[in-house]
Amino acid sequence: MKYKTIIEPFKIKSVEPIRFTTREEREVLLKEAGYNPFMLHSDDVLIDLLTDSGTSAMSSKQWAGIMEGDEAYAGSKSFYRFEAVVKSITQMKHIIPTHQGRAAEKILFSIVGGPGKYFPNNTHFDTTRANIEFTGSEAVDLLNEVGKHPEVRADFKGNMDIGKLEAFIKEKGPENIPLCMITVTNNSGGGQPVSMQNIRETKDICSKYGIPLFIDACRFAENAYFIKLREKSYENKTPLEIAQEMFSYADGVTMSAKKDALVNIGGFLALNDDELAMKCRNLLIVTEGFPTYGGLAGRDLEAVAQGLLEVLDEHYLQYRIRSVEYLGEKLLSVGVPIIEPPGGHAIYIDAKRFTPHIPPEQYPGQSIVCELYIEGGVRAVEIGSVMFGKYDKQGKLIPAMMELVRLAIPRRVYTQSHVDYLIEVISEVYRKRDELKGYRITYEAPMLRHFTAKFEPINQ
Image (cartoon, rainbow, N blue to C red; front, side, top):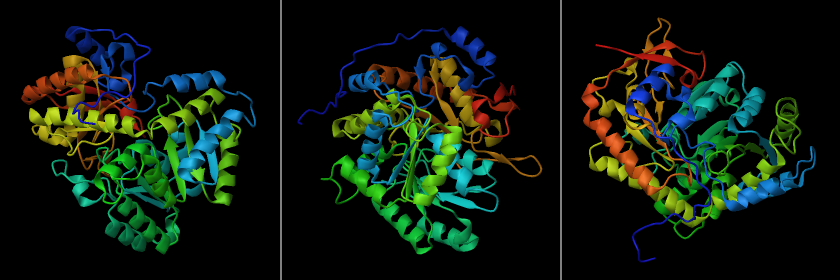
């Protein structure tokens, strides 16, 4: 196509109004929410970038599928359509539906986890880490070195560090590592893709030591498109063909369908191991429901099946990746420090460089998140020492590897004018960055504290 402008590959058929608030209103609302945007009411938010999970706009075909959903308790035809689509993409033998990705993780790690066990990953996201640690196991991140440097540009900053993986297996013993995971794209690492070569190399190491490889496939289609764009010999392959090869190296898959399946609820666990699948189904019945609905209505299974087909459309993926890239380019042009290059589903502001005067123990990412809401009604999320920081035995904070603010872009929801408004808001907060203050935590839960923590500003 000769034109430079990449248009949205869809027409808008239904709209939802946005309620506009004043700065004064937002200051009060944020204070009442304990300076935690998770606790804000959604109708008090102008642009909601808290997450891309479950926030997609569904298509007319997905809504049509919802009307056709078969709500039979067992043997629903909607399940068999869902199963066929997932099998066609993953090539896995056993497809187990769950109500979302963390439910798949809960089932899997409840069976294979336990004290004295270790689970390596390129980078675990919050719920994966929590479900592993809840069993008494240890979740270990083995991100490649370049992925730890936000300002450095590289094609596949989400890759596993292969050398560290093998060294870790030798240190802990393969008998203590029930499985290895690789997350595509790497969410905690900035939405950065993983190369096919890295997936193959990870599989080779796992096979050498008899360790199954699992893929956290929340954003598998975006990762497949990055491979098409950046990895030699894949430029003429379709996203489906690339995804199928990715999954061919895996022994199992967990997925939150709320991301790349373009739905508001749903997930699955896909396995090749017959015995493990049987154990997972038995636990599914106790916790989620019968194996042919897994905590989902038949209509939701229909929507997931259709969404998995739509997400692999190359026109959609081109629009999706370019939209995020556009936001990143505009922010870089005014000096805002971000993880480079832009990832697939979000832009990640580098809070360390944005607010160098705020130390990690005063949560610079949280400071930026709060200011974005006050300034323009934008809701984002901290991915740094609030989300991933730990305490040593003396109660001192061990900071996260990076201090980030994630601007997760819901799929098919916002237009370019929304993004341009967002750029203005972020630019204004950046202009006033020296005025930002740190925060202290006044309440935190023992796990996944970022969801419900309360804060107060530090008045220096």
